[in-house]
Length: 161
Image 1 (cartoon, rainbow, N blue to C red):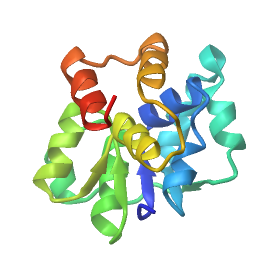
Image 2 (cartoon, rainbow, N blue to C red):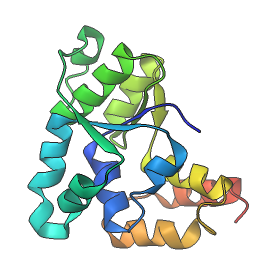
Image 3 (cartoon, one colour):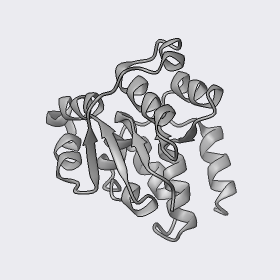
């Protein structure tokens, strides 16, 4: 099991779109989403229903926004990314689940635990929670997630596909 996951909007939205939101709970005993992130997820609810799915997911704990970590603030990220990374910086054992490149660079610079949507899927594949990555990555792309061909090739190679 992975420690507590603090999720940003895009992983929640994309996993909900492809019917794989529950994988977050399958790989972690606790999944938290800052209030500002849930507001972002719910704002797009009319488009794809991700907000309703996230709200209905009993394993997602919506937590209040917290004061911004000064080291995170220097990166001038969006409000959701800032909240997720501030949580990860403040709470030992919290792993940030973020796809945004600048936020990922910030997390690495600060030495924070980090996963992306594709990493969540790779863990799920490794644990036998999904039979194959290729069709799920295809579904992510169909759902609007931009994935570089190099990343797809690398993750499939690393997972033995």
